[in-house]
Each structure stands twice: as structure tokens, then as C-alpha cells.
Image (cartoon, rainbow, N blue to C red; front, top):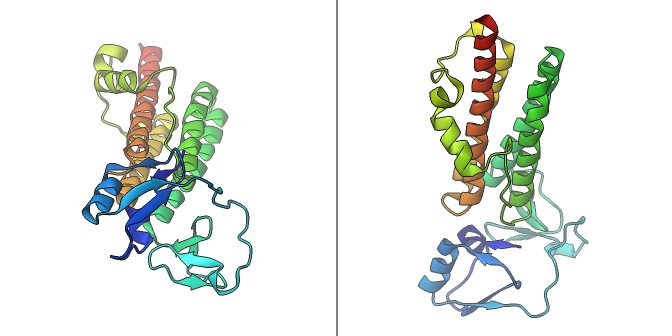
Length: 244
């Protein structure tokens, strides 16, 4: 399923003469996008013969091979300061959505390194548990790049409400207070805490890129932060049990 956002409509440079805007069948139109069209008295319709937006390298079309998603300007060659948003649409490399993709990519790299370090430290169960996080972050990136809704999924065999409840009731669930961290807690705890803070940065990048339009992505990133917090608290509780 594709998604039509207000940003997409603005990048299409709709003029006052436009009275109709067509989308592919099954496209999800965000509330802000619908409001944008309504304010401009533009009718939303579905295309009958739809061709998928190309995901392969763009075929050369002369001066109109690439198009600036913000201004509508076309290019024969991709400028070095620009990159693909999707298909043949280009944006500057500092565009908020590109920044979000970079943040998600950096998080994946840090997550993989963390899994390796945890396994080296003898905490393979945590490294294996983080596979859930890795799979989810890749799904988030895929949903953003392909402009499709993110499918809901469980983390550590918990749904969104269970994760929220668990993370808010650590003392009742694990028998420890909400932790105030220090270096003596050891590398596994500190590595997990770093992941937690980095996923928060990804969440902020998602808000910067989409505002209120992609709540599925923002909520998923918030859920990941809570899930990693739970994993960190479980490790602290395990250490406490071992010392008593």
C-alpha cells in the first residue's frame, strides 16, 4: 500500500488550475493530505491503469530524467548534492527524510556491533534477543522508503500495550527500582542504554521528517526504545539476583 502525504502534494507543485489529483488504487491518504486538497478544492480520484513507480535505476529521459521533489525542476543527470527520495524524485542530501534514513542506518550499525560485543562478553541471550529489534528497525526503514504503512508486530513476544505496561512498572515486574545508571553496572547494561538513547534520536528524526503524518513510524520507534529499556532492566535484575 502506498501513502500520500501533505509533503508529497506540496512537492508536486500544484497550481490554482489543478482541479483533480489522481492516486493509485488502495493508496492511503493522510488526514493532512486530504485537508490540503480540500482547502484548494482539488478532487481526489483513483487511477485506472496504474504503473508502479520504478524502483530500478531510472531510464535516461534526456533533460527530464530526474525531478526535484521540492521544486519540480528536472535534470538530465543527478546533481551531486542530491539523492533519491523514491523513483526518479530527488531531494537534497540534508532533507529530513534522508536524515531519518541515515539515523536508522547508523542505529543498525551500532546494534550489530552491540550484538557482537555482547556475545563476546558471554551475554549471547541478549544478543539473540536483539534480533527482534534488528528485524523491526529494518521493517521501519522499508516502510519509510517504500511509502507504505508499517505492519504491527510483537517485540520479545509482547504487543505495544504489553511493552508500555511493562516499561512503566519495572519495580512490580522485575523487583528493582527504575535504574539510575553508573559505570559499575557493566558493559552489557551500558551498551543497551546507548542503544536506547540512539533509538530516541531516530524517533526525533522521524518527527522532524514527517511531523504528525507517519505516526506508525514514530510510535514504532518509541516502542523500540521501551523494549530496549526492558531488556536493560532485565539485565540489571539478573545481576542483582546473582549477587544476592
